[in-house]
Length: 379
Ligand SMILES: NC(=O)c1ccc[n+]([C@@H]2O[C@H](COP(=O)([O-])OP(=O)(O)OC[C@H]3O[C@@H](n4cnc5c(N)ncnc54)[C@H](O)[C@@H]3O)[C@@H](O)[C@H]2O)c1
Image 1 (cartoon, rainbow, N blue to C red):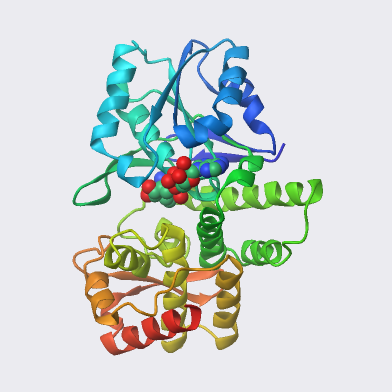
Image 2 (cartoon, helix red, strand yellow):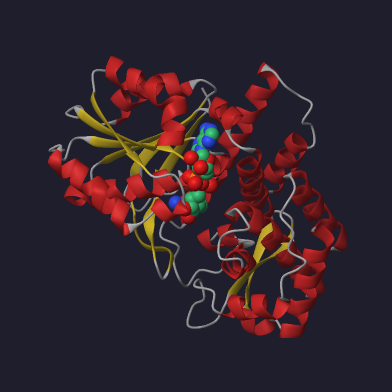
């Protein structure tokens, strides 16, 4: 079983990320191992799409491990990652008399994981959490690192907490039911992780994407191994900078995971979150960051070409060449990740090595040209 161990210096907490095709049927065994021995009750939080596909199997597995399982479903979609749904989940836990030693199991994509994770972080000031991510994005990214939270009407992820799970169970076979666009979005985040911090991971991701004809158990094994490596990469970055320290701007700081995100947030906002899946917007964001890096003399043309190939290999992206660059520029200026009003751009000095650059060094002209080049070439 490929297992990634996450060790966090800050609190000496360690947990395992287990990756295997078919692991859904072993969630109970993993829970038994990872949760405190007094854990009796488990809230299985999911949405109806995922629960219909995998809920019964998880229920059965947890019940076989002698947990008293109480399922609760939340709505499907980003708009349900809200204070209102959080309130419903917390009321459910209270009314069902969950105790400190009991736990939450989050079964679903990043929406369920962030929401259920946040509920487990604040209920009784923190109870156990087991993540069972079922989208590619949640398997390689959101279930690793302990960020949990909900959206506010004023913006995404504005309220949240760091709360590490006791274990993560990744069943790569769940990706077989995932819609194509969700896969593309997830692969864009996978390319992002390699491009921003790990050349070997980037090469392996691109090699996997370039051979879609492989199928069967060999390819299942390759996918599980790649996902485990993606998790290990994210875990290593998180371990070195658990809370994303504001002052850090080095090539191993957690900020590098925002590669592609400055433009992505602007694209999502310009299209009112209706056109792009987040990962698709990150696809364009990486291309813009790549163009900027090349124009600033940081990145070789051949490296930019490789980045383009990788983004292309993730799948088709919705068009972006009809968007007004002026509007995108304005939105970028209001990026919520700015520090003291200054944007920090995550750029590349080569594939696998990020460089964090102050927004003051990037002129509007340079940015407009980069937006134009990235949007045209890919639409
Ligand atoms: N906590 C973090 O560090 C972190 C990092 C990145 C993103 N996020 C958050 O993650 C969220 C996005 O997550 P997401 O991309 O997983 O979206 P999502 O949770 O909305 O899932 C996408 C869709 O796929 C469906 N689905 C899930 N698993 C499926 C399966 N196996 N088969 C068929 N359908 C399935 C879902 O019901 C949903 O309709 C955002 O809210 C984002 O803010 C958090």
